[in-house]
Amino acid sequence: MAKGAQKPIKQVKKVVLAYSGGLDTSVIIPWLKENYGCEVVAMAADVGQGEELAPLKEKAIATGASKIYIEDLKKEFVEEFLFPTLQANAVYEGKYLLGTSIARPLIARRQIEIAHREGADAVAHGCTGKGNDQVRFELTYKALDPRITVIAPWREWDLRSREEEIAYAAAHGIPVPVTKEKPYSMDRNLWHLSHEGGILEDPWQEPGEEMFLLTASPEKAPDAPAYVEIEFEKGIPTGINGKKYQPVGLVEKLNTLAGAHGIGREDLVENRLVGMKSRGVYETPGGTILHIAHRELEYLTLDRETMHFKEMLSLKYAEMVYYGLWFTPLKRAMDAFIGETQRQATGVVRLKLFKGSCTVVGRKSAYSLYREDLATFGADAVYNQKDAAGFINLFGLPMAVQAMLEAERQKTGAEADEVEAEMAGRKSQKQAQMVVGG
Image 1 (cartoon, rainbow, N blue to C red):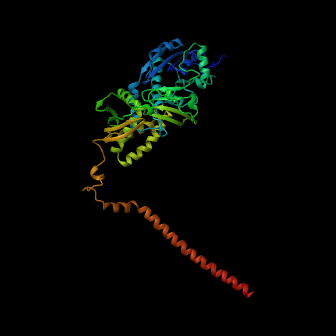
Image 2: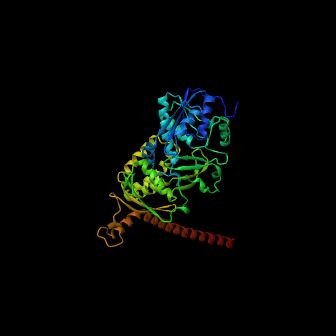
Image 3: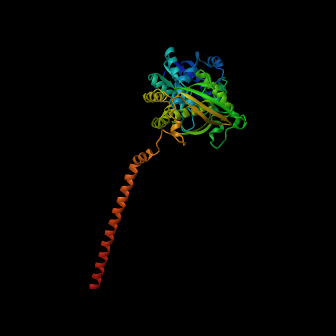
């Protein structure tokens, strides 16, 4: 049996493949036809890759697909996936702004919709058996159509490396954008560009500057800072420097502004859902300054208890997105809570961009809970400082009670020690008398 061949696990008639035109999915089309004998319909999602998608049609058909859908999902991506995650302040393990994670449920949702339209009995993806994406795709399939057959070639074929995939592609006359000399795996969309593989598999190795495509080197960024003001309405960014933008255009504009100043690079050794650690380098220029600005606006407009609770929820929300649990009851419930917190998240945040850093230098909102007349160190007629004494007494009452209890226990213990010592002394005296008398 030829390399890559295998007996099909289940007979299928038509499969819809999530197709990117990259190495994995380029190989998968002929592999599906060879091993399953089924019709293959390709589906390519435009989520802002910045690449020409038109050539994919010719390429998919040439490698055996009967049809290809090229779907423009940028608007849905920003409005239904990116902005809700932004409102949640979701960051995985303190660094990762979830660029790849957020896109997968959207792509898988459209894949299922096309499968229903085509009357397909199966869907397929090019995710490896070591990665997170297989989980994200397949949990979406289960949530939207639990009966559909799922084909995951990486878990079935005997191709065990990218080098073997490249050889398989060459044998089948398939051009691929990866070589053995530069085997980086990149995923790009409106929100970010991720880099994995190659020298990055050694966490001690510094990424080469030539790898970065969205962000300038901070050392070579402009020597003068740039100031940018971002407007929000109920937690949604709507304008830049006084000009209104549509969601997609706003993210694209901020990517350009922030990228020019070297903002948005993250180098992370992260905990994958499947149990291993992996190293990824991410470029998220516009997303980084949006996250900083939105969080700062909430510092101004959210009360203390709500903000602190939301910080805990943000960690869980990031995990849910990273784990592929987008279409779940808990995710919907969290969205309801977050929506309530955004009712007053309207205002403007001013940022200073300079050589890789993004600093908040101003914020204002009609819903601001900050009161200068309360916070001032100068004279005021609102806050009576004498009231603080009673507050401290009540707030510290549990600690005072605990201290009194410890003092009483220590006193009781000291008295018990004195009694025990006296009894021990009497016993020793009696024993001495008995010895003398004997």
